[in-house]
Image 1 (spheres, rainbow, N blue to C red):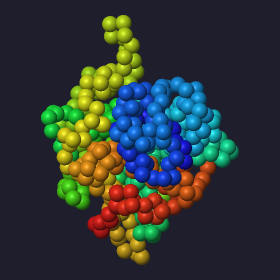
Image 2: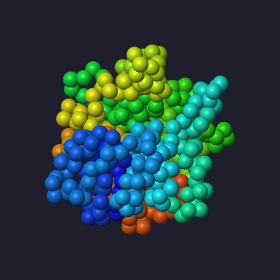
Image 3: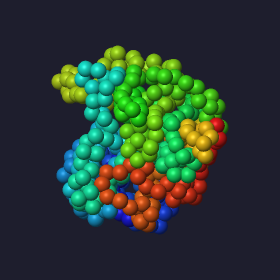
Image 4: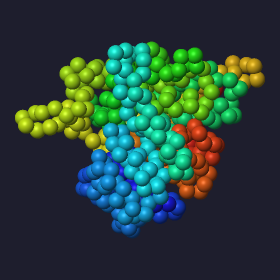
Length: 402
């Protein structure tokens, strides 16, 4: 397989690192706006792998440049590993050149103009799903939302429906962590740009009789007991799983809740109050700049925080329903330990956990275990072949009966 990796930040580095030992990965182009960053990752992969992992400059906002690089290297698949503000260009470039497309976060939402905390406006992924028939006609695959959440968690939802339940009452993605970062009062362990987008947009909930609707940010707090971590308060956050799971898995309700500290929520609320979450450019002393980009530039790069991080993260899918006429609850999950991820991959736990699903999906596509055409989520595919590979990739899953 030949891959154009668009974006070599923390997750992009982890994708390349996890793919490196796999012989089926013939070529992975490390394409980034920051050439020095791409060269840094190439160097970490070793001189012997320089030809397999060539470096290229790319402007992810320039669709023609993406198409040109795809043709230059004859790639089979474009892996989108940049902030989702660039999704449309990369998605459309893959369609135009006839390449398989993958991302870990779908095209962005826009809140309802008059009732944002009750009604959806433009939903996550709407742009992509609106073009699904075009992809089907061209017999091309766009696999959207294939990180850990969304991604692995969606595979778990499909597995639960196929093998563990007769009827599902609720699919609830639950994410918690015990991560600490030494030396920083505030340092997100993932892209702050994406974090702001997820946490400050109105969260989406799906119910069988209502369809998709929204609620206020940080709503419906609950305490969830995470394996190897313990009880963590989680709250509603906008996330792709709620937009993906009901399309392929029958359930009465779908939610996503994330563990956020009071301090973290407070910082995000302050950014919003000051307008620093704005992604539209403003003029500052004659220079056009987006406030959110300024915030991101002021914070440490998550890709370089691994040696200052400690603790574990747990991502998974809580499922409630019935089996053989009896009530049943399970939590399918994966725990990533930062110390182990740094030792094995040289990447911090959050980005490593996000990246492994993408590489497994490439593996399955390359070996024709996952096939299809159109715009598809992870739920559209047979789940056991994915889950069987998790331990081999160093990310085994667990199952807890609740």
